[in-house]
Amino acid sequence: MIDESDKQIIRVLNKDARLSYREIAQMLNLSVGTVSHRIKRMEEKGIIKGYVPSIDPEKVGYELRAIIYLNISKGKMRDVEEQIVGYNNIVGVYDVTGDFDAVVIGRFVNRRQLNDFVKEIQTIEYVERTNTSVILEVLKEDILVDI
Image 1 (cartoon, rainbow, N blue to C red):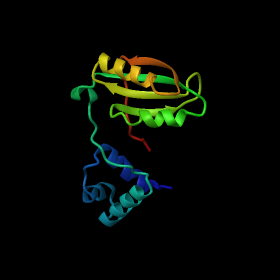
Image 2 (cartoon, rainbow, N blue to C red):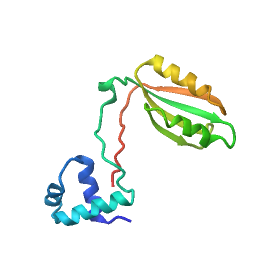
Image 3 (cartoon, helix red, strand yellow):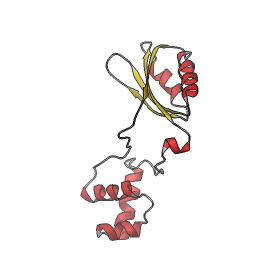
Image 4 (cartoon, rainbow, N blue to C red):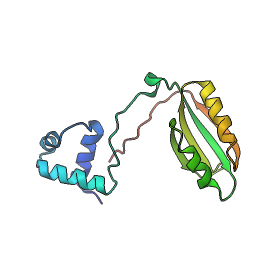
């Protein structure tokens, strides 16, 4: 799937995705053409899905994070999840094992916004039960894949 050179390129991009192909090539002792080709190939294969700035949610007004656990009627999980993924402040929707069927992770401006969101998803057809945990402190939150 990927070799050591691809891994090195990904590690460099994880630190600073704004570097030019030339800068990456110099850092890794590769040709610019090799770096360009490898990055384009990884993009085409979906290994590299995009480039986004790392934003501190609290500094842009999202002071509250929450984990919302859902019980969903049998056979209706995908229907419910597809409705929830459309909310801009939702950062993750997961199928899980255990006492709940799905987990939603979201960022909220304040308690009122969280409260309104939870009440809204409770009105979605097939949502049987929710359980919400407010995140008190974030010790690590990283979307980077360390390879």
